[in-house]
Image (cartoon, rainbow, N blue to C red; front, side):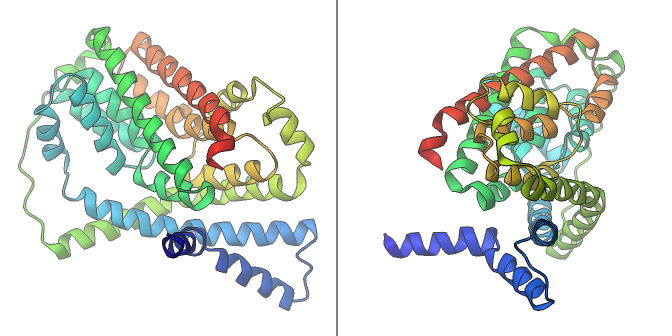
Length: 337
């Protein structure tokens, strides 16, 4: 068991967490005559370490997930979902969301395509909730920061929120609140050509480059904010607003996160810095979930496809689910960290 623990710790801290990179950057700055104990140099070290680490993880994950995704084009995904009914369809839809795009804006076109194909609206909403919230990238990135227990539980409760949210929408028969042009569009189910391994590798490379170009500015912004929080914001301030002494910290973090736009890669450095400063785990995760699932740009896009009543229900379900998840993680934080 000790050998397995040693191997796992090496994987978590040196492979995913890249602690060797942190030491290397610190040594490099020190060799240049800079004092890494000062705030300014500490901010530079944090910025360089997180940007390089997240970029490496980002490119690796997108390439791997895109390669997997090449086996699940929209036409095949529609056929898979069409074989299931009831809550099982919601479960499969939520799981399918874990191997699709990294942000809510990228998920909405697929949601529209699934809905146009005649899939139940509750099933498509389970996909729409899970896709930005609990993709495979979030699992590995959270594991690199918070550990395996937090990452696995986060994905599990995220899938629960997606399944429950989609089921509620299905039971309320909200189909009439989908815009008519979506329902009447229909779908031409063209069989995707068989791809060779080389084709899949090219596809994965193109997806990696495309996603990286879109996401990298948000990584820089997120890491910049994280560096400021990590080295310049007093711990007492963070603990006062987002710590255990503020029972409304989860609600506040969720409401702050909703109008923002980023993805898991942009929010990770902010989360890392907040945890270091004493913010509660559940409060941090609520902020991350709100940013990735309910960003303002994605809600504007979604409004084009659904009517205000269904949009409001979707936002309400996600917001309540995120808040409950936050309080749940705060309650168990002592057992998993």
